[in-house]
Image (tube, each protein chain N blue to C red):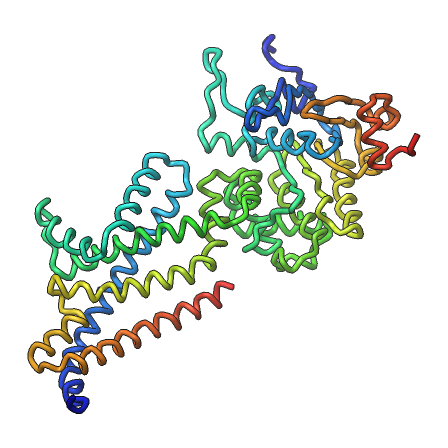
Length: 216
Length: 264
């Protein structure tokens, strides 16, 4: 076995840095969309909107029961069939957001349902509607409980974005793979790749810890 | 005045109210009229259906049968062509806010200060500006002698203080009727007095209330009327003096067990 090729890591750095920026862009867009989708569906899950609730159940059932890779291909190949031409980047954002959104919906639902029923009863007794009690009483109280599992989910989202390399989005994993094809140093580049992801996810964890402390 | 209008002397009318849980009647055909400024004390052994009766009045629990009218308004819905049409959520909430409720476990909103626990109703439900709602809340908290604690969260307050905030929260909605569901049962003995004192002062001001309680001394002194419930039914409905001298066998037995009368 030859020596560790530091030169290859240096050579790849500008490309991988660009890839990392794309991964960040995709992840942040998908996180925002996933959080929106997930919170709305979580709220629907505890509401009295029967039809929408059933649709959310079906959606969560599908997302949980199929691999993210399959979902990514479905979005990439299926949307053009119904006349929606999205770039690879946008397809990636949509696929990641809808994947994560399903899990976030469950996290939000569990968070809301974990609040003592006395809180809802008190809210109703002062004349709030069910919707007001969810919005003003249950949701604010569940935020702190939701933060740790939500962080896990968003970390998963960042890592799942590596799968977008298969629909040739030039994100971090794809950038490393392209250099591998050129320089034949898979070990060095996967090693570097792991390091890049670790840095991004460490930053995300720190932000989450800060948020959790603030919500205390 | 139409012949269909109900007895205007009654603030609250309960007619044939029942609540079943899995076919078991927890409240069994209860009928009751409460006049303005009456203080109705509801007593009885645990499992008698006292709390469920209370919860059916403001529809936190939906009654299985019967109806509840507050100031002549049916709490469940409107009659159209003889049929009862259930209220949509907003109308139901509007009716419910006429009835204040105080819970055994306080149920203060854990994420809000004492001040905002009281202000959130006037602000979010009655549409008052936040600053006005907070001013009103400060007034209500002063009435229950908590002016020094307005910025504390529920977790920083004693049980007695929490329950007084809960009373202020309910009163801030200017209810026509107050329901108290064992308001002192979760309190340390030395904190019971301060809460009973606040309830007594509301009674003195003429607030109409129904109080489920195990405090027999309090029921005797403050109540204008005592209901004794057992097995979901109201077995005795009498002024306190009469109730505590009641010859009703189950009532005697209950009073003996809670040491409200000396053993025979």
